Length: 338
Image (cartoon, rainbow, N blue to C red; front, side, top):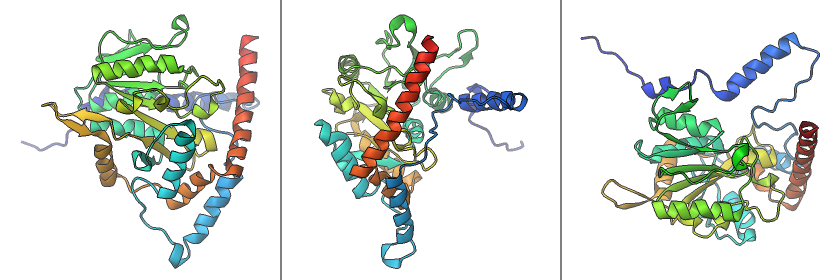
């Protein structure tokens, strides 16, 4: 018998190309025959303004440190350097009255990577709930892992996935599902609808997760664009969330790090998963073990740049850029309404 190498056939369930690759292909084809038209690409959530000066200056200084023996940095801690995690703990959480210890924070090279890689910690038998429409990474990575059935072209849905419709008819707010999921993806502000969830709306999901021993994967990559005072920037503003939620944050949308790659994930000490015989297991410890094995950390240079975004000058410069994007959004909305 001839020995053969077999593949993970779950990959064959995926659609032929990644959504954003498909969008870019269509744009490029259109541009070739319409060279006189300037295209505003609203596909992938990239930025158009350069990185803030404070971050660039910090990274330049860090580069210079790397050529001096006494200040050179090789492998850094897998969780990230203390100088950045302490800034995150203080500025993104404690200032909002949320106590997040620096050791509950994991620096990574992108929220996309973390939302995908975290699925490794959970059994393929777990039931997954996602909003519809959805950021494609949530769905595709669970298909790859084997948590879905086959794709139904007629329904434009995968079997064994719980879809949470976010349509005009329900004001783009996902409703609690009848079938209980183990893993729930929530993105606020939502990608791609832009909808935000109030504290009361998030509390329903937190209470639901507590009751059913589910885990919420909360993506708040666009939190810096929240304008309303009564909208949470973090799910941990909701009582009980530390028991059931993992939060993802990104420097890509706030500081323009889409090409630099830096983000962080918060996994509270309280968050537990379970073995088949019901034994509690720390999700934070599992993720730390996974990262130590598969990840060598974000570069020192990048993390110094991220740290600079929390300086007084860095925060001012970020606000100017975000205000610029918000004005673009206002103009887009006005044009659509007209």
